[in-house]
Amino acid sequence: MQRKVITREEYAKRINIIIDYIANNLDGEIDLQRLAGVSGFSPFHFHRIFKAIVGESLGAFIVRMRIETAARLLRYTAVPVQDIAYSVGYNVPSSLTKVFKQFYAISPIDYRNNKNHTIMRPLQISEDVKLKDPKIVELPPRKAIYVRLQGDYRTMDYCGAYNKLWAFIKENKLFTAGIEAITISHDDPKVTDTDKLRTDVCLAVHKEVLPKGEIGIRDIPGGKFAVFTYIGPYDKLINVFDTIYGKWLPESGYELRMECGFEKYVNDSSKVAPEKLKTEIYLPIQ
Image (cartoon, rainbow, N blue to C red; front, side, top):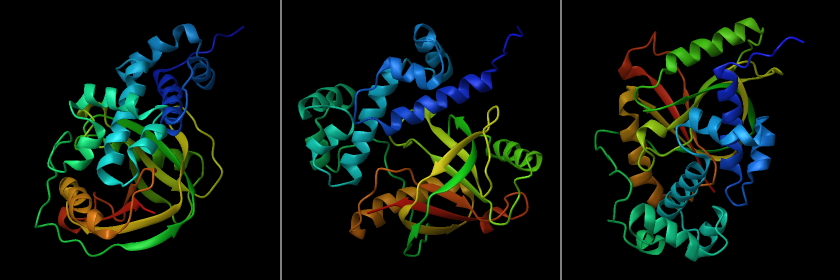
């Protein structure tokens, strides 16, 4: 019998499935046997494989996801602390309080009430960033092919990832009008260490497709979004996001949904001057 060869890309793809499962199930018990079954790895080896690919243990990763999610909800929403505790997997608010204090040396309630207390990196609101009021739109869900990157958002190899995706489009005859270049950032750089930031570089497609190697398939959730249009270089996007979160959101009357937002790149950075690059930023709201 021929032995099946599993590449690092295949290992990473399976671990990405697990990471997405964890992110979508923070409100419940996350069982090792279930995770191993979803990934197709033996429970005996699962922990070692996860740490080798992700760079931290499974337990530490789950706790960090829960606490960082709670921190964002406390800062950017009015959801009661008790409900936040339940939504990130703690049966009683006191359990969230205990772990939150271990991470940030402040209780969740004190953090919410003290807007001047910084556990996140400071916002970089720039008066040079001129943003018009967003369009409020309802979008249908979509399918996308993607490559997942990890590390500093500012230095990730986005071009290399998009080249792989477009080559996949050509190889599998997936080209149609209306393919969109999108990135979905899973972590907040104000909270998460730079080396642990994760992003999905995506092309939204309109034909049926199966994953292959490091090219995965994912849903892009629909719903209500505030859509901001920014024209300028990509290295200023962090200021744009901070301006949206620091100025627009608190005054908007909207709350964030527990979904990832995304950016859509309207023109080609290899053909357009940096000051003319057009980016649409989609913020999930309710």
